[in-house]
Picture 1 (cartoon, rainbow, N blue to C red):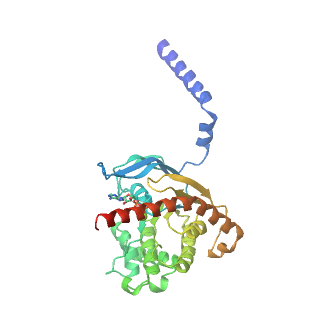
Picture 2: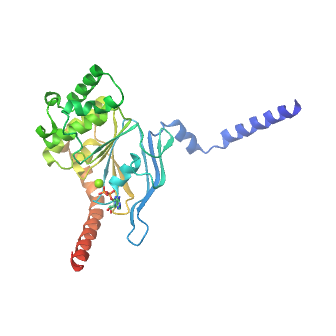
Picture 3: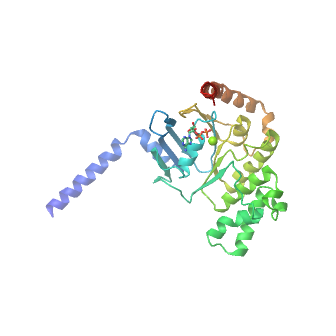
Length: 304
Ligand SMILES: Nc1ncnc2c1ncn2[C@@H]1O[C@H](COP(=O)(O)OP(=O)(O)O)[C@@H](O)[C@H]1O
Ligand SMILES: [Mg+2]
């Protein structure tokens, strides 16, 4: 009895000491809302011989519930690689990905991905495309239809629900793909240049649909884009990446009021934010351009 009493006492003293020794910063961090997604010190190299490419180096990022984050950087800087790691399509990398504090490696139901490439099923109507993940989940016919129609309405395609992809414009197909991914109700939506193939005006208008999705579903979203305008229009934060190996150069807080629409591009603050991002990006994009031109020159010299 005596022994167990003294052990308990020791334990109490230890835990008391721990609580008081804890650095103020850590207590503060604990009080703050925990990040939904944590990307911790991720590095990725493709290949191991002389031609190895270092795609990402020490990338860390925290994403909170409801946030809309855009990632921008020169072509080839590792943006898609980063998303493929978060989405579980690439599992061989250094560092860690945590969702709700739990380490994940591989595909995860909380993450939904949308790609730039044509990814709608051509043999299914827009509605049947959106119903697809619900079929997989075993959701009943009526509910499937209802949920798919609600999502198509949200992205502005209610009148096109029975059309097949071949009858839809590029922007409509992109929205169908987004609605289909949303149907699975992912906690985090990853979009890799979903509007990348569209012209600037269409992109701005479709950006309004993404703003609506974000607002109505409180959808935590990460977007890769090469458009600074699009990034500023939509985001709470813009992550600017360096040229290869991709590192985070700066995270720019977009302090524009919400709710927003594409009309926000008229504001003075919008112009200031775009200019500030371009200042950072310009240097990286120039390095990217120089590298791709050098590669072309080497190819030409080698007779390609
Ligand atoms: N599967 C792969 N095998 C080898 N190299 C790859 C592979 N995927 C990407 N890379 C290389 O990694 C770098 C980053 O690619 P990526 O993430 O697609 O860039 P971004 O999306 O920013 O344009 C590029 O140099 C690319 O060629
Ligand atoms: Mg890419």
